[in-house]
Amino acid sequence: MHIPSHPGASPLGKPATYIAEYDPALLFPIARQGKRDELGLAAGSTLPFFGVDIWNAYEVSWLNLRGKPQIAIATITVPADSPNIVESKSFKLYLNSFNQTRLAGADALTELLRADLSAGFGAAIQVSLTLADQFGTLKMGEFDGLLLDRLDLEINDYTPDASLLHANHEAAIVEQTFVSHLLKSNCLVTGQPDWGSVQIRYVGAPIDEENLLRYLIGFRNHNEFHEQCVERIFIDILRQCKPQKLAVYARYTRRGGLDINPWRSNFSSGKRPSNLRNARQ
Image 1 (cartoon, rainbow, N blue to C red):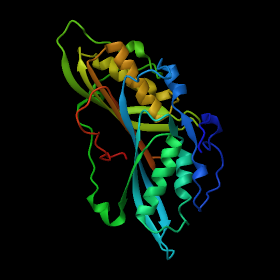
Image 2: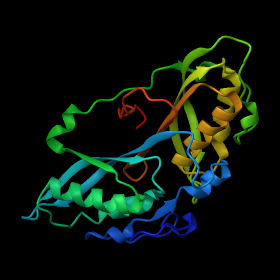
Image 3: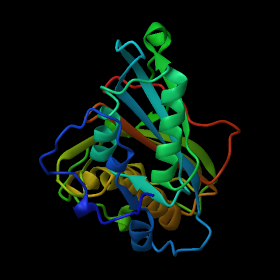
Image 4: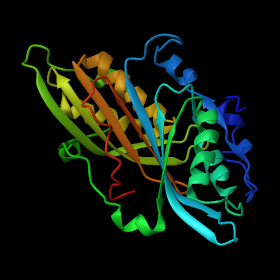
């Protein structure tokens, strides 16, 4: 059983012994609620969004029953209403515990991943493997939308300031999609930089684009995990600008063979967000 703990007790920032035999106890869950409390999202209340966190793991390997190494890319989809996240270094250590583990095949690995990670996240997760002979089918793509980074701004503050966000509620409702590649935050525990691109789908009163970009750049010195940053962006825009529809999707560059891509939305298009890897990933 995985019991959520404080981020500071995680393997992050500490010397690690890489265990090459299967060990699900390496997974380190962290409860989502602590950071949601900071956003005014009380435990037990209905979340103002739904969504997923899409993890892509590029360093997945195990042994077949004859001892020959096998490789794959794993995609793990975690519902945003799961009670926990799993700290990424512990996730990497867990994946590495398969390196010298003999398994009957990819299906056996998938079932172990699904069971262990569902226990860690505290909710049913989805796992899919792309095997080596399928690597050629993988594609890349970039976010569509109006590039906020085109704006020539003077920036003096590098902490997120929700008061910058505002919309013109006297104007007609607009439907817009904004993109920025200038999202940068820092790991909550180690302070190491996390780099990402963000897409904001918005239906509502016209939002001030320059201040939206200032707000996003404001995360540059901010310490939070990926999932927490995206939820903060979503809640700040929702409260300050009061759009009818809002979706925020960030794709972060990989660290330790993992990329994490949180998506939060309050409306359904009938399909999940694309998992196309962008150029920086």
